[in-house]
Amino acid sequence: MSCHLPTDGFGTVAWWGFTPAIDLIPLLPPSHNTAKEIHILLVGVSDLRHVIRTLGTHLPTYKYNDVTFHFYIAENCVEVLTREIMFSILLTEPLAVIGLQERVELYLELLGNLHIRSQTFEYLKAVSNKLINLITDLDEMHIEFPFIDITKLKFKERDQIESVLKFWRSDDVKFFEASSLWDKRLRGYLSNRYDSKEGVFDWDFNMKMLEQTKLINGHEYCVWRSEGLAFNIRSDALYNTPNRSLASGVIIRRHGEEVKIRGYWGDIIVGPFICFGIETNKKELKEKSSLPHARSSEDISVDNLTRYLHQMTSHTIYKESIEPMKLEKVYEVSEDYEISSPEAVEGANAKFNKPEDGIINLKSVFHFLPLSSPGDLPNRSKYSELFSLAYFSNTSLHSLVPEISEIMSPDGVLVLESSNYLIEFNKEQHSRYREVMTSRAQTALFELDELQTGSGNPDHFIYKRNMPST
Image (cartoon, rainbow, N blue to C red; front, side):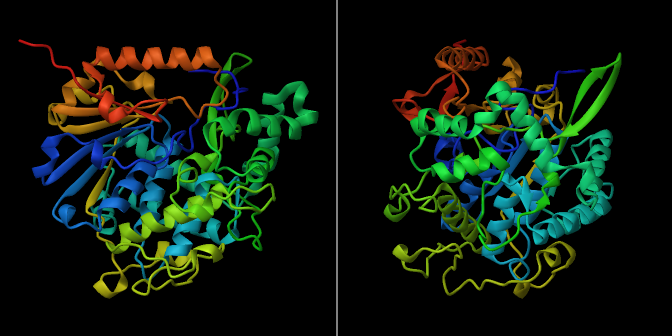
């Protein structure tokens, strides 16, 4: 299938989500209260943010000690799927190898920075090398990473993942000249406005982004729009290595032939700030300032992710060991958690088999589904009425087919993203999206749960089963 090169701001690949991370547990139907296994379908989430917040919120609680969460993850792009496999490994590296601070930094850099530190690239290469050896050896994969299930992927898809991993580990910059590719996207999108791009970025921030959130700093937003650097966590570090995990290909027709062109085909107008960086209860992180380096979405992202990852990995409540008003770029945690500072690459190469090595018990399994999902799932009897909750992103609404009701439990819940943060949309497009969303949910026999969804302009719409009477 051929396509035109993307000239809009969203591109053709969603590398990150366009709504804040949410805790999925309160949305589950009543039947989950006594269940020992909870099955959740996630379509087009891009970045595991909802998994992180859900597990990071509830793993420390006694109630879920005996519950296993099964997250079934479906994407329509092999590069995005490969990134999620990589993220799932990063999130569960042994504690003795990658400390909390480094784990947070690696995640955010790989998530949303066009350029990363050399240490981060070494980690990406090491993970790639390890996965290349395991992607075709499912038995060894299960031994190394029992929380990752790739058995449902087709042989062709595993081959494609292997190809992506081989590209990631390459040192040859010429195959992904990130700065040049970003600039080309800007030129294509801005056209004759390119020479005044700083003014365009400022306008988009003040007239569009601020309508949705006041917690993104204008300076950090404009830096990201200009050069693709979202998280400058270590201000004294060099972010000069292309983040090859943000590369993907599009198929175009040239002289009658289909040609795949690799480039950066993701979002260049919203940014990865939405995922973890626009919600906080901390007063000091909400302080407004016009200074370039004032409190920012980056600070909020680091703070939230630090808490979630601590609670995921240690199963204990996160306690800060720093004074709130003296929050710095470098974060520490409670006394029962020791931050280590090894080279990141060691985390991907080492094997750990002893409890004292800090093996993480995630109490969950990530099931990675074929690219044809979820449309094919209703055709498989093992998925019949399996899922307590199904989540569809705003970039995957087209995948919400009527047959989806067949794989939902009788009291299953459907969660759909709003288009609030798709700032390139005008009012008519937002309205049209809402109409399509409502229609697809109703066709799949779901009706809006107004109590769970809430009033106003929510980020997520919650639907409950609307089974016809017999």
